Length: 206
Image 1: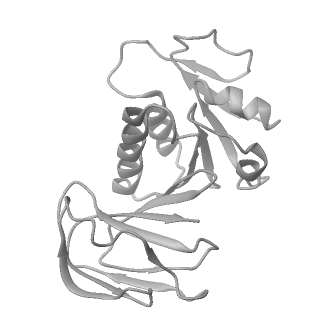
Image 2 (image 1 turned 30 degrees about the vertical axis):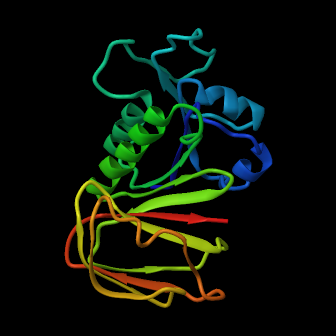
């Protein structure tokens, strides 16, 4: 099973940068207004899902129309649908910018994917956002110079960071603690992250 790319209706200003993140064999799914972004990038779309409350459903061979009043966002419905189809690798684009409540709900979708044993990343022109729930992980250098770690929803216990500019040992990172913001890679070296419990929100940025 290949990778599923979900394109939302959030802010995309540099289509060339975003398009370069997409592989030829990706399955492209548009969450409602994300279809506009896909058309601007001249992408071949496999499925469009949404309630289409602000515009008519697009002319496409595979459209799933949702009710306007529902219990999940269009983006999370896309994620659930394609997890159900067997996908375990996701790239989410058009998920930031604009309304912050939408951005936050997209972080919740990222968490949903992680809980369902998926590899999932939210990316925009400046950031790469993902979660670490494993007790040990290696963050490989991928071109971003800055990296920040946040406790997501609950404290992260006994966090250890090695190989970054600012290292840390046996520290309990609380939800309201910004200690681990604006760390950085040392050259192109990878960073080791360890912890005993909790989920880390990781943001790599330029």
